[in-house]
Amino acid sequence: MERTRGIAEAVSAVRRGELIVLPTDTVYGVGADAFVPPAVTALLEAKGRGREMPPPVLVGSVRAATALVDDLGTYGQDLIDEFWPGALTLVCRANPNLMWDLGETKGTVAVRMPMHELAVEILKETGPLAVSSANLSGQPAARSAGEAEKMLGESVSVYLDGGLSGRADPSTILDLTGPVPRVLRKGAIPVDKIRAVVGVVLTDHDFAGDGLKEPAEPEPAKPSLIKEEPAEAVAEPEPAKPSLTKGEPAQAQEEAAEGLADTAEPAGSAAEAAAGPSLVKKEPEDG
Image (cartoon, rainbow, N blue to C red; front, side, top):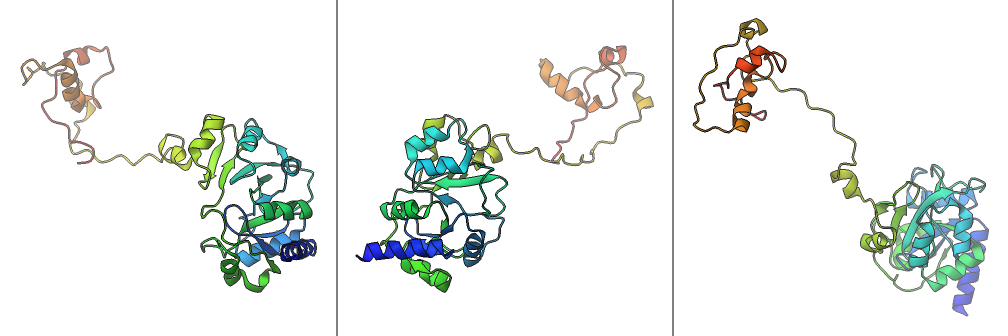
């Protein structure tokens, strides 16, 4: 009886454009009707967020999710088959015909079907809900209705208490809008399991350390510690001097000749052929 009454009150609150707190399979969420812009605005204000951080959307079925997106891409259906319902949020291109305003989404939507009986039952009654973790921005996500109420207070009309949430980790967020899936947030679904389905997955590490980040600006040239002679002074090559190291390999001789590289004549000239190794050891750049 209490469960039935709680669900009915939560559904009624959503239809009035009010906020509810509900348990999910990850953490507690604060939700609003995704198709009522003032309700979504109230959700962002309750959390202390701006429009630049739009909330994800929870759905009660795969069919509801596919109605929200324009294209699941190459891997979307395989990921849904493997991990839904569950703790994987998929970012896809949003259906351009939908009349909603979740914030500055740049034409995308983050959608998920939770593995939680109570949450799914509510979602099937209300339709898609804009849902974010039930906490103030910057604070730990609530794992109970009581924790959520301490942070969100009277900004929420109905708190549904389903005990402790199933996991402490939030959902893993995967961006499918590019040619290769990219992890935007690590969470309850390990990256290795996702990689086993799609083959290649990009992470922040890939962008930071595997050559995918933008090239850095070149450092300004450091002053040389060896004063270069004017070009006229070396126009006539000096006779080759003997190597100071017996049996010095060709590569070492070429390295020793770098001291004249900036002023030597073009390759193939007589000057280059006659020039010997420099006797001045070139200082390292870090010197």
